[in-house]
Length: 102
Image (tube, rainbow, N blue to C red; front, side, top):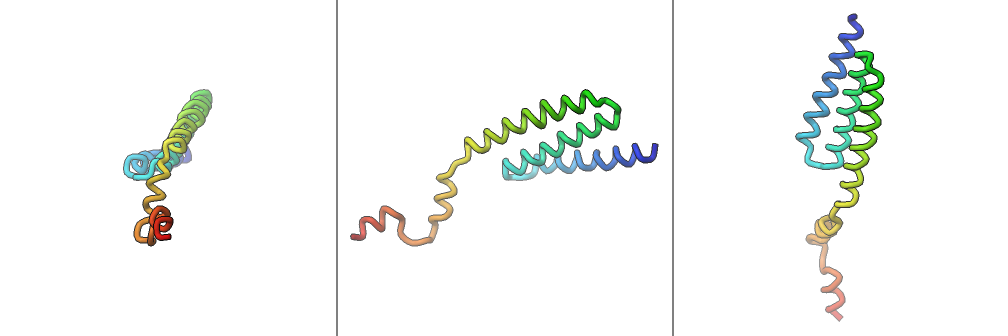
């Protein structure tokens, strides 16, 4: 009984910390990874409650499906022009200015 209580407290802390991290982190990719940790720890709660089928469904549907969907959404909507603009600040003339210098 003590081991079950300790496991519950441990994974409850992991669930709460990762869920709080999902809300507070500014990077979408890191939020998706923390969401995966939260969903996996909920699946572990199901295992400790001897609901193995629910744990398997939790992992397959939510961790496997929803997180893959979020991963594709992040990869496909990533704006590369913002990254290029950040690197060009204060680095000298741009390509168009250099070609007009001739």
